[in-house]
Image (cartoon, rainbow, N blue to C red):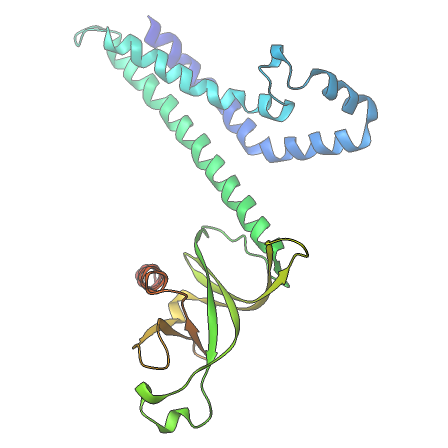
Length: 263
């Protein structure tokens, strides 16, 4: 029976799991060999991304076993559609499909984790003096650039609607599911071009569980402002538009509430 064959084959799926666990090491070894072995580098240059390799690199070919899992699932589901409900093979076909789907889910989750870690590593490189961002279960949610405001020393002695605020800089806000990172933002203009280079320098990283965000009502002197309050410091920020402020506060407040629920 076909179900028997595939169900027996699923006992060998540990090889796929081992391959998956060793995949990052495999890629690192591949890169090291390319750097240290000119003959190997030349071999790859001749044979990679050719019609007989379906225009894929060696690294891409190494991940084909994971894609093959989907082919097995589609094949078995096609057989299942034409297998009557009372057929003796139907139960084992269903069990085999479930086994392959579990493995496919494992591959997908692993791929998502690698992409998430790579994104955090790239983000860490963008921010000067940034601490290590890659932590277990951490994922990136949203990034916003805002204006940093301060109030004159006399500002606290007058009603909020009459306070005059001053722009003292710019901030980059990087929101994760467990923390908020603040970075000083500066701009560098490229000569003879409209391009503007954004430079971020780490300022603080705070857990969402100890963070509070407060809306600041619009007045004659300030619009689209809000405050970010930590146990040790307060940041007075101004969004560039009402829409930006509304979307940012909605996401930030939801993330804080979710973080508190996990306590």
